[in-house]
Image (cartoon, rainbow, N blue to C red; front, side):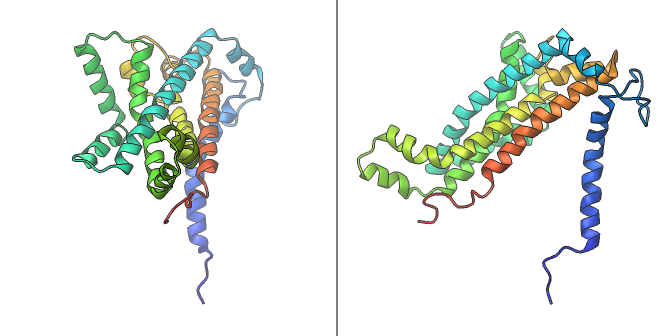
Length: 268
C-alpha cells in the first residue's frame, strides 16, 4: 500500500542539509553575546549584552545602516514602477522581440554579480558619472526590477484578460480598470516582490563594491571590519541585524504569495 510519508533516510538528509546551512548563522548569533573580543572561542568564555550598547553608540554603524536602508527603499520604489510595466507589456501584448526583451529584463539577476558590477562601473566611467548614492541605487535597481517583474508577470499570466474586457464593456476607463480590477489581483504579488527586492538590496555586496566609490553600505562595512577587525562582536551584532532585516521581508513575501495559485478570473 502506497504511503505519502517520506522515508526516514530522506527526513534525516533534509534535517542534515538544513543544519549545515543554518548552524553557521546560529553561531553568529551566539558570538554576538561573547565576552571575548579578539577571537572566536568555542564555547564562548562568557556571555554579555554589552556589545549591543557598543554597537548602538558607533556612528559608523548608523551611517552605513542609513545608507543601506535609503538605497534599498529607493531601489525598491523604482522596481515597483518599472517591474509591473514591463510585466504588463510582456504578458498582455504580442510584439516582435517580446521574448528577447523578457530575457534582457531578467539577465541582470541571472548573470554573476561581478559581471553586472564591472559592466556598471565601466559604463559610469565612460559616461564620466562620479560614484555617488545614485550610482549605488542604479546598480541595485537592475536586479530589484527583475524580482518585482518575475512576481508580476506570473500573476498577470494567471489573471484572465476577460476581467479587463468586462470592465471596459461596463464603461470603466483605463485608470478605473487598473485601480479596481488589475491592481487588486496583482497587489500581493507586487508587495511580495517589493519585500524581496528590499531584502536583496539591503544585503547586496558585489554590485555595491563596484558602484559605491568611497561610500559604505552596511554589508560593505561588515566586509571591511572582517578584514581589519577592531571589535569582532560588534560585527556579529550587525550581522545578526542584517539577518533579521532580510529574513522578515522574505518571510512576509512567502505568506503573501502562499495560496495564490488561484486568482480572480483564472481559467475563465
